View 1: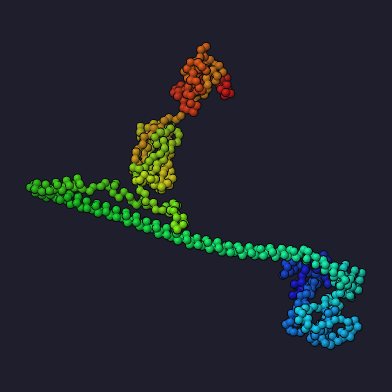
View 2: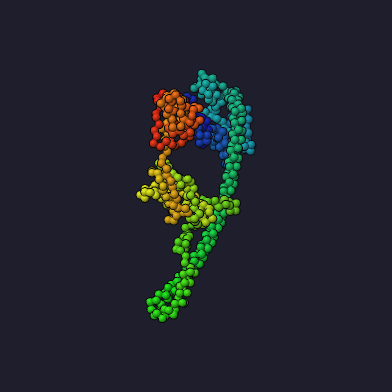
Length: 525
C-alpha cells in the first residue's frame, strides 16, 4: 500500500540506480490517487520509490492500535525507547548496548510513549541493497539517496554529499514550487471549486423552484381547462335543450295539423264515397266550412322551411380563442351560427365581368341571419358558369375553402359572350344567383408605335401614316406637331389612343408599317 501510494511520476530507475534499457519491456501502471501513468522499472514494483511517510503513519497507527512496536535491532522484544539520531526503535537491552558503543553513545534517546503522545514516529530510511545501512548520502550524479557502502562501490566517482548538507537546496526547490506556484493555485482551485459548488447548489435550487412553478402553472392551467371544458359542455347542453324544445314544439304543431287535415280529408272522402245525394247535401255546409277552414287557416309549412337547421351549424372550433379563465388563456368555442342564404354576399368584379383567356376571381362570403360571417368552412359550395347562347359551353370553376366562412372562386373563360354564374350552397341558390357575367374578347395589342407624331417617329418619311386625324401639308400622310388634328400628346400610331397601356381601338385596321429608318429612330427616342 505504501509503495503504491508513493508513486510520484514516470522515469523510475532500477534498484541499481540505472534507468531501464530500450530493449527491456516497459510495463505502465496507473496511480489510483493521482491518475499518473508510471513505468515499472525492470526490477518490478520493488524498484518504485518508497513512501516512507506512509510507512511511518503505518507504524504510528500500529503503535496506537497495539500499544507497542517491535525492536528494530533484535526484533524480539517490544521497543520502549527510540534513538532520535539513528531513528531506530530499541528495547531496553538494545538501548543499553546502543549507549555503550562509542559511535552512538552521545545519541539522544526518547521514550516511545512520549513520542506516541506527541503523535510523531519515524523510522530510518534503509538502503534496499544494504538493509543494515541508512541512506545518509545523496548522489548528485544519479539524483538519488545512497548509503555509505553504495557510495563506496556503485557511486565511487560520483558527486556524493551528506543529506543534511544539501537538503536545504532540494528542499528549497520543493518549497519554492509549493509556496510560490502551487499554493496560490491551490487557493484559486479551492475558490473555483467552492464557486462551482455554490453555483451547483444555486442551480439545483433554481431548478427546483422553476419546476415547482411549472407544476403550479400546470395545475392551474389544467384546472382552468377543466373549468372551460365544463362550461362548453354546459353550453352544449343548453343548445341541445333549446333545439330539442323547438323541434318538439314544431313536431306537436305538425302532428296536430296532420291529424286535423287527415280527419277532414277522411270524412270528406267517406261522405263522397258512401253518402247519398241527400246526405251529401245535408252535410255540405259543415263539410265545406271545415275544409275551407283547413285550407285557409290550417298550419301548412313548406318542407324546405321545416327544421331548417339539421344541427350541422353546431361546431366546436378548437383553435378559436375563448378569452381567459382564472387568468389563463384558453381556446375552443362552440359555434352555433346558422347559414342564411339570403344573407350570403358575393365580392369581386369577377362575378360580373371577365376577359377571354384571362383568370377571373370573386369571393363568396357565407353569413348567418345577423349578416355576420360564419367564421368556419366546410360548406358544400357549387359554382357553375354556363354560356347563355351555347348551353354546351361551360367554364370550369375552382372553389377554395378559406375555412373562415369565405370561398375563393377562380375561372378562366375560353370564349367571349354572356354567361350565367350559378352559386349554390347546400344545393340552394344564394341571393342573386344566377348572376349575369359578360366575358369580353381578349385584349387587342397595339400594332403601331407610341409616338409624339409621325414626322418624328418616321424620321420625316412622307408615306408614314398615323391612326389619329392629324395631317401635314407638303405631301405628308401622317401627323405632325402643331398641325391640324394632332391630339397634342403622345399617342398610338395604329389607332390614335393616347393611353399607352390600353387596347387597340382600330378594328380591322392595319396601319402602314413605318420604314426601317423610322423604326430605328423610334427605338432611339
